Length: 305
Image 1: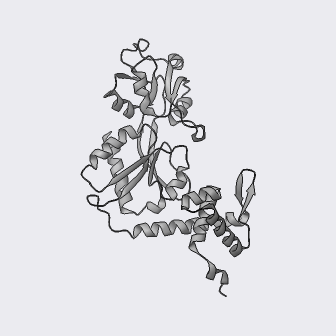
Image 2: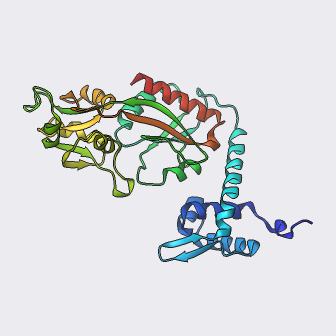
Image 3: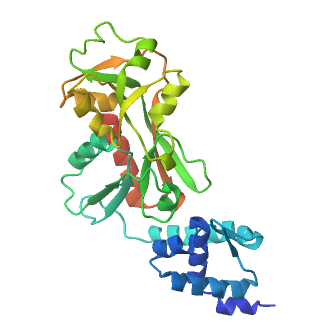
């Protein structure tokens, strides 16, 4: 027997449910969908009527899904993702030389300084192509990838959540940078000396967690004395070349900065694991021809670094 509730089912309601479940907030769900909070509340009321369940309950810290909502979430999310993927596959065949697409890429602060110039050079002849680069480490990059607000993200670890794809771009050793002729580094640097040298270091917002370099140094048992914390790695060489502060970064970035700043590159005094860089995307982009081209192009860029 046909369920009469399907006659009242609106796919927009499922999109609202998916956004509320993903964001954990009616306000954030509305912002992501471009809807007012009143419209989101109205859609949720219709869904509650259809399901016979409150779906989300208010708590002291926001809202939480009911057992019914949790049971619905994976199926609804998969259906929404399938529709997104289907619509993307129906776009016209991608031609890099003439397509007017804007590619949305998230690159951690600092890494953009060595990747974006080469990306711009390789695509200089593609007049209709655009790139928008962000560095939203403190935001929910998984949601942004899924909802298409970011098409591709570079990160220091693969995405293990279902529905996402990851591919290793390269691994790079960490090194120490210092001003040319730094008086304390004429004979290299020991682990004890590394821990005493005042450093300028990248510091992300607290909610973003420790930086990849910090985690790798900790894993190698190297302590750092951070005198100056900055939000972007590109600040490190300009600080380092003017005084006796030193900094830690990946070798590819250090080599790039050494072409423009009066800095030397020194090996670290321990066997520190290499810094991995992955590109991460949502599976709904997997068969998009433009996205396939973007992934291949970024691999080409990173091979040239």
